Length: 301
DNA sequence: GACCAGGTGCCAG
DNA sequence: CTGGCACATGGT
Image 1 (tube, rainbow, N blue to C red):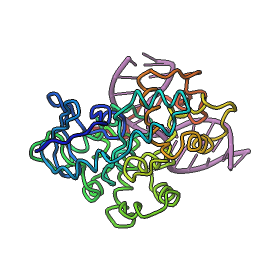
Image 2 (spheres, chains in turn green, red, brown):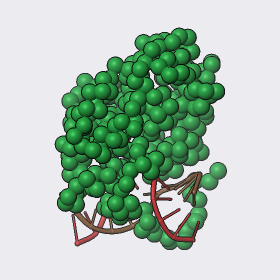
Image 3 (cartoon, rainbow, N blue to C red):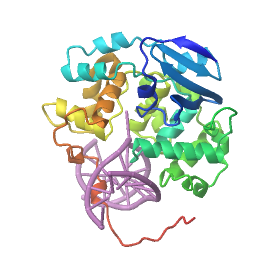
């Protein structure tokens, strides 16, 4: 229980910008948790009121030490980025607990933010530890998820992601993969290690690096960022990796932050993107889905 | 119904 | 190396 003074924070924007997925509106604020600690948060102007947990953990999670003004000025010469950065004033890149961030982004492929939130909350409600003082349970430990069946996870709405999360949970629970160790690695090696886990490719790895390991230069190229970077570019990009490199160069040392501002603006329809269809990005294939007529559910109930 | 969502794995050429 | 598809689910 306490109050923190924070001139450069937009709590709602930060918690709803597609990096964390488990903060629920509660009264005029939010309730959720950081790891196993329940929190209730409410912002009034420059004051952040909180109950539960402790101030240091909260400050660290919300990254109140990030110098947002320096981040904004890093793209002052790029009109679109500058506009997005100003519009997203107070949006901070969180420092999320490693496991829950890693696991949650395994859920993200081909899902909208609202769906990821549903899956995350279902996992928490069905398998997470209940926390006194919050409707939101903790994210289940690797060992808990590893002990479940693939169908248990499918019942949380995971679809084909169930297999990936289960296998990754097993590797973490067994100690074969240690999320803590990633923090000590240079970004390139950290990315490679993350990509060795099932369900984690370059994009998801970059999300995890950005939202949990404070690699603020990481640029996760999803459909939105892909379209935006394409629109900035003269030539068409060859590959997604090429587009990512282009983004890193263009957006600078805080590319991940700027990317988040652009992502938010685009999602709100506040950014004009030429050729808004996903056709501009080669890996968007789901409109070619094959219909073979087999509607049989192989994983009923 | 058709289309799309903060993509990844796998396989053929 | 690249191109092309399957993969589950839910919302508009």
